[in-house]
Image (cartoon, rainbow, N blue to C red):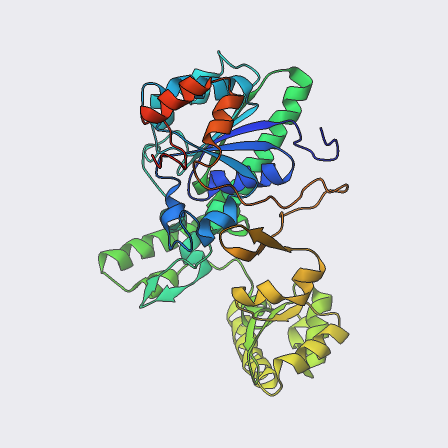
Length: 428
């Protein structure tokens, strides 16, 4: 056992597809866990999304490395024999079934705890296990819409809110689940008992909005009540979404919104600036050759303050538009100001800073050739987390995995013939 790897010796069985559970399992595998990914006979659905080779896609490679894939028809009566042997060896089981399916398969925490008291069960749901939406299906886009995250991110297409390309709630949920599994395993070391970790995409989306998820009743209560009433009026009148979104109560001050915490157009691009403290704000004004009178004499009238920063905004925009992004970067760096040009995601695959810090990994893939992917999202000394190898093709390890579970060659042949599982040779 590799003692420097935190999850060395931990056996994980993944009943997951799409993002949250698969990415969590990948992180555990990068930390040394042995992960067996249970897939439908046709494979995880993301294997079919724009295939670059049979069963291999960008989406699959992005969150299914370092695992062993075992195809299994969970509804087949004989699949229970395979599942029982997997669970008898497992330390962790991860699931993101649609509501009710884990109970149907007997893979929910309540069913597993009496039989496997040391087992840690991790579940992902869309909206949590209780309440009126508990039985509803949901994916990242739906949860973003439901939680206000989509509106908060501010992307508008054709007058309608839209999600970006990044399924941020899914990935936040995956990392929360990974933390929960680590916490449950630590507790098991102390108590000898396993447990159940529940995470929800809804909570992940709310955590991403933590700055907005605060209401001081004495200050915000009346404002929120007025905004809710006005929103109901706008919706009843069928007003455009952008008009509805405009009434969201602002948490940021006029100075932050207009000047100090925003993006600016430069002569050749866009620059993001984040000057939160008074010291940084003064340095920003100095770099631009401007002055913010509100720093020296507080403006207490809200309307006057709004007019002041609207005017300062126009002056700042004019100054920043006069130089290139590169020129401003040098000036801001000299003043110690947090600022960056706005990049597109694919540019980061060749980014000097990302490469210098090992944030990217060049994966030698047997079917696709060289593939640049993200490295593990954290480091631990002693190479505690290491990039995983590509998960072998679906069915490539079926016989080996079933042999490990104690099935004889004849039993394995029968399971293949009955359609409980498949391998590459039989293609079933």
